[in-house]
Image (tube, rainbow, N blue to C red):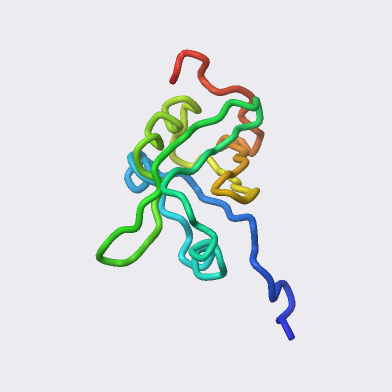
Length: 121
């Protein structure tokens, strides 16, 4: 039986607080998210992120050799620039399957950031 607030199934959502020092060139998936089942569902080397405007961003997924962590790599910096991410922004990821994620971006003020930078990518 699962404890209160926990599910026995795969959690298809996670959040990240953006900190440029740690996340401007790569995004590290939460280890618990990978351990709960994402690792078994990864069949491709690319991931697609779709923001609220419907714009899609393709990037490379890779495993870090030392720790075995799963990362979004090539393509992630363009997403960061395109969404003008700054320290303290809050991102919610929803896994849709087939290495596709919907992403909602919230600013430090707690409100959703409405639009990606149209000049990027």
